[in-house]
Image (cartoon, rainbow, N blue to C red; front, side, top):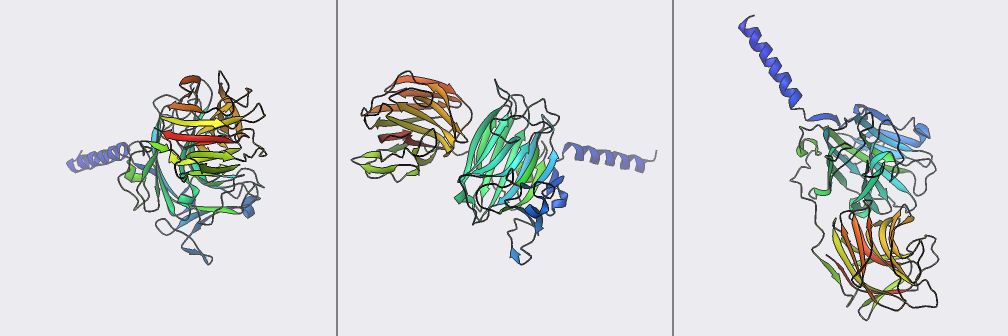
Amino acid sequence: MRLSSLLLSTTLLLLIGANSSHAAVIESVTEDIADARSREHSTSKGGSTCNKLENVTTFTNNNAHPIRAGKQAFLHWVNRCGERSELSMRRSVIGETYWYGWSMFIPSNWDNPSDDYDILAQWPIYPSVRKLACGAAGSYMIRSGDSISFRLQRQGTTSETECTRYTLANLSEVRGKWVDFVMQAKWTGNTDGFVKLWMKIGNEAYVQKVNYSGRTYWNGERSGPYFKMGLYKGDPNFSGAAPRYLYTDEYRLGDANAKFEDVAPPGSYSEPKPQPEAPQSTFEDFSSSASNFSVQSGGAWSVSNGKYLLTYANGGLSQAHNRNISVHKNILPESFVLKADASSTATSSSWDDFSIIFNYQDGNNYYYASFNESDNRHTNGIFRVVGGVSTQLANFNSTIQGGTTYNIRIEKTKDTIEVYRNGSLQATAKDTTFTGGRAGLGSYNNSATFDNFSIE
């Protein structure tokens, strides 16, 4: 063999080896929807009349459209007769690590109907469909009420499925802005999996919103999840505003050799901030106002004589859990101690009550500790509300008396919840459904008084 041929062969082998061992971005859809593995719209329920997926430029058909980078973005449009408008990407391999990057734009005039939802991104299971704790067919990102959250579903420790919800932002924070996402994930049913998710709103810096370690998938599936971005509404004739539409752009998928900046949308990379800690402490003595609280439902809330009062409690709302809720603005850390002095107004009823709310995502998803003069499966214990349905996680060993003030302490350490009343442990529960969110105060149908609210 000639020396020149030997050198050429060696060079080619080195190049091939370098490319195979240093692959980074292995899939991208940044300019044309035709680059995606599949486009799910025209063959969905309602057909192309009710589900649209289009490339758009700054001006298309005399309409202005936002473009994240390059010349085009992707418009996802679903009318009330439709179901979905999504770009579907390549399937992953169980046990492998991947980097995802993509952008989303929610129009400034988007409504947030409380009786409906919008799924904004998905990591579906393939090929089977399991009965999952958070619904849908895998992990996903959703707008529910005024909250946008990520719901991680995976093999449970003692059950087939577990779901954890992570609050990402309020809808008011992201309307009319490009929002960039970067995710690193190892999809596996083993305990060495992880999911890390960063989010960047407009010109702000990236902030880490999820930092999870543990099982992330199911080893019994044929392949890992595949990424979908766009808009999914479920069955046609959905409630709320219609048509619904949003934009996506700048999708990239990296393998284990990729880095954050390889998949981050162009021009958006900055050194990501670590996951933010909640304030070191929160304390409200209601000496002048309750301006850091916002009423979510029911009743009349006011400050008087250094107390936060719930009066004219609304007992007519239909839900079988808290009909009266006011929540604090601060986001809870993964582990915290929540304290409050609380009393239920004494009445002739034997069901006087008050509640302490925590990990509140929206009015249909949160935990609460209910304290009541009577005890049944709807009162006096630790409860979880998912999709508006309340489930008791643990029962308290004694009841309260109306008109008596109690010091309540709730300690949450990762998945363990302990509730104390006047220093005495009332119940312990374990649950992984919610993290983050906010804390608050409430009752089922009774007036109540609160003071010395603190979070540490």
